[in-house]
Structure formats: structure tokens, C-alpha cells
Amino acid sequence: MPGMQGFVTEQIVSYGLGSDLSRAAEVINYYTPEHVPVFNAMAENFVLFDRWFASVPGPTNPNRAYLTSGTSHGHGQNDHDFDVSNLPQVSIFEQLSAAGISWINYSNTTGFLPDSLFYQWTANSGKGTTNVKPIDQFFNDAKAGTLPQFTWINPECCSYMSFHPPSPINMGEGFIKSIYEALRSSPQWNETLFILTFDEHGGFADHVSPPENVPAGDNLTYTETAKDGQEATFHFDRLGIRVPTILMSPWVGKGLVQNSPTDQPNEFTHTSILKYVAELWNLDILTPRVDWSPSFRGLITNNFRETPEKLPEPA
Image (tube, rainbow, N blue to C red; front, side):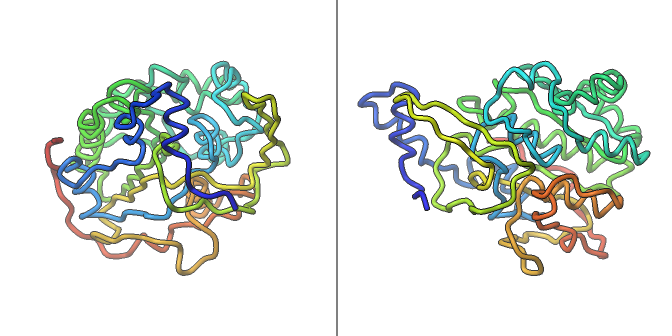
């Protein structure tokens, strides 16, 4: 099994830091609760996963594809197909439409297409016009109590509010605070589950080795040529590095740290969201990876409780 080492070396090589070890060491640094008061308040009041793994040990869009369709269709990089709605597989958005379940992809992104528009179906069906809305519409809909049954939010990427290095973390915290407070003040809050997650780990170090020998979403592979000319083929049989994920709702426990599932095998990962949605609305399981993924259904309780109306101001 590959070890979880080499993050500092990779940082030096990737960004040409040379002997600037203080900059290279940023990849193994961390924030204290005082640095991230919004995150800290979310963790203290809701459910924080400490073993939630990205779907792919790779960049943004392959992970977002797994998150929304259960496979990246053989893509291991943020390549051109994501920019021109060229992914052919069935996504959660197509599945929801077929089942008559309302959805909107609210988008603030400036760097990539909104996630739902990765897919040929979304572009060809016209849903890219009717079901993709600017982020301002989310706040209007939340206030009016007219959010769809399934809401998907893309923050901007990748400058100020996305937590993407080197953007200020307080601006990212300001954005997620605004989303939470819009939901909390909405007439629909009592029937809302807010899932906050990150597509990938951003290159930051972790000591926990991602699970291996997991089912791929399909039988496609990804091959890349290294700088030394050697080729490596990835079979999508290993998860990515852990990412922060928080469940927020008046129907989940307070201050719970969720480790590996206790009632199911395997580990929580992005496709656990697809597994839960399939259970919630009796949908087909999209791929073998989704089938493998544990659901977090057991964390949704029958006990309603009061939750904070406001979160702290970012530091």
C-alpha cells in the first residue's frame, strides 16, 4: 500500500518553491477553531464526518462527476469534456427528472460549468436553461419557501469564496454562513437536510490512507504519462483523501463526530449522497460504486430540535 508521505516534496516540485521550506510546509499546516469559527459552530451543532473520503485521488471535476453520477466515465483530470457538456452517463439530475422530483442547480461558479451541465442529457434536454439558476435565486427561493426537493449549489471557483488556495478562508466561511442562515430562516427549514462537502482535499496532507479495492463506477480506466515518460493507469479502485463533510438539519444529532459506519461495511464517500438519495426517493442505484457506498440514513432521527438561527462571524 502506498504511504501517506511526500506532500511537502510534491508542493516544492509543483510550485517551484525550491528552498522556501516555510511555504512548502503550508501543505501540512492546519487551522484552529479560532481561525474557522463558522466551521467550528457547524461541527459543534450538527454531525461532522471524520472518515469521509473523496471519490477519486484526483482533481475537482472527476470527483464532482462521481458525486453526481457515481462515475467519472474514465476521466482523471479536469479535461475539455467537462467544459462542453460531453459526459454521456446518467446523472442524479436526469434520474430526478425521470422520477418527477424537482431540482435546481444554483451556481455561482466562474471557473467551470455548473455540475449538472457536465452531462449531455442536461444540455440536450433543455434543463440547462430551466434548472440551472444563479446563486442569487437560491436566496430568493429560500426566503420564499420555494426551494425544490433537491437543491445543488456550486460556489464560485476558484478565487475568493470557494476555500480554494490561496483564497482567504474567512471569505469561504462567509459564503457557507450565508447559505446556512438562508436555509435556517426559510419556511422549509423543518424539512431540510443541508450537506456541506468538498470535492477534493486541495493537495493538503493527511495521515489516513484512503481505502483500496473499492468498486469502480464502470469498467473505464484513466492513463496518464508522468514527466519521466512512464505511463500509469488508474482503475478507479481507490478512494481519494478525506474531505470535511457536515450534515445539518433539525433532525440530526448535536455535536456528533461520525467515524466509519457502525451498521454497514465500507467507508463514507461522495457517492454515499447518491446512495441516500436513492433510498429517500426509491431510485435505481446508478453504479457499482454507489451500491458499495454506505448510506447515512441512520443519522437522520425522528427527534426535532432547535438549531442556531445565526452562526458566528468569520475571523
